[in-house]
Picture 1 (cartoon, rainbow, N blue to C red):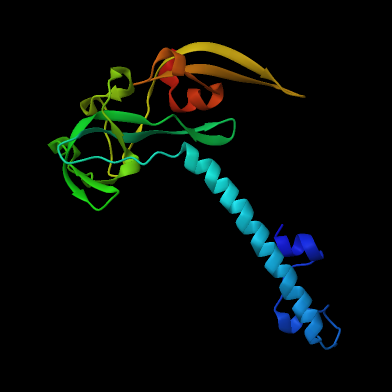
Picture 2 (picture 1 turned 120 degrees about the vertical axis):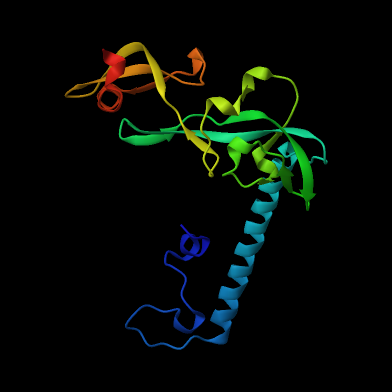
Length: 206
């Protein structure tokens, strides 16, 4: 609900027509002045709220900045084209092998030196797509093991069924399976609808 509607119980219209449909009454200057004063109060309170929320986020925000010849990981998004209980989902982002920054364009744009197998990917990235190289090898993957497209995403493929569970609803039961995905660890296996997995990957149930 907009602040104006919350205050007056109706949506905001032009000052020329601040009256109910069908009525034909003049708006006196004092009425317009009162309305403008209330609008001013609303704007001030909204600005105060926005400033407060901004102060909370600024405390947690850290500016990310790199230099030329720095090494960074590149973020990719593993996508799954399956329906999970009627909803499409995706696995958590991953980072592929470190690349060197060969050029900085402005404050937040960097050009990376990509290998030939990623020739379809544009080499210029926003700083949010990069992660500084600091030690945890388990958070990275070799790019040769996955096919990254020009949108920096790749399709995850299931490799095994780890468990089978039943979810009881009011009138029926839904069978789900715990799926281990390629390039994922065991603790990152996800629950998927058994019927959907059988249709798309029948070889897992042989």
